[in-house]
Amino acid sequence: MANRILEELRQTRPLESRQQEAVLNILRTADALKRGLELLLKRHGISSAQYNVLRILRGAGERGLHCSGIAERMITAEPDITRLLTRMERLGLLVRHRNGRDRRMVTVIATERGLQLLDELDGPLRELQERQFALLAADDVAELIGGLEKVRESMARAG
Image (cartoon, rainbow, N blue to C red; front, side, top):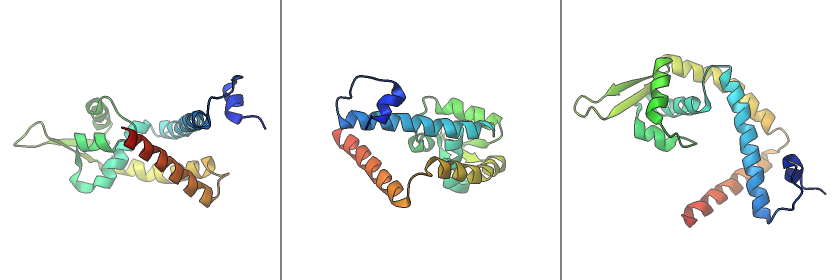
């Protein structure tokens, strides 16, 4: 049986290891998942980074979060969180409040508009993810999650 990732990448040289095959599969799959998400979000006028910020703020509730708290919870690293938040504030998706005693401390809170956008996206996003994982049984999804968590744990231990 031919190696599917080699076919997809049109590579003729064999891979060096199963770990290399796994990495290529993860990267290729992550890219496909992200493209699907970006396409859905683009129709609603936001990027995946903006969506991620809104999800984080919805989880934080009415108290909001400081910029650093948002940055540490992001799924992918955002090099300029301040600029991202500024764009979102201009779109009316969030508000920022400066601390009266320490002007450097900024609390960010999702606006009603931002929360409403998230509510609108919940159903379409769930449907997208169901389509993306349609060929996997629930046990397969659980096994995939467990394997990916072990990979991240290995990386954390290796430093």
